[in-house]
Image 1 (cartoon, one colour):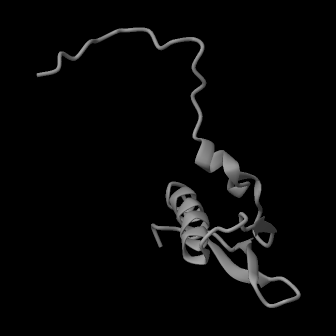
Image 2: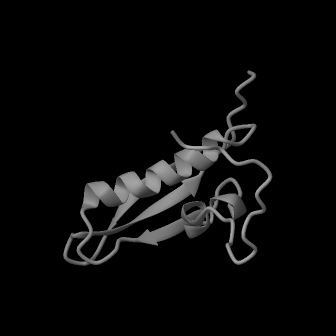
Length: 96
């Protein structure tokens, strides 16, 4: 059994931040803005898409009104997928 401690101060040398959310500029984007997200070298296309889309969905769903995004794959001159372009769409009011 683990004992739960209360009122233990958080270490001052630790930085509190959500690094995944900070990786992408969702918060700074206005409706109509887009951003190119390059794919990492040797990254699986499905994992890449899932990582980026999960990030903007998570951010968008936490906002009120909800922020909406969409994406399209980007290809290099040889036709290989090398990134995504993500657009910020209009907001969705969950109370409508």
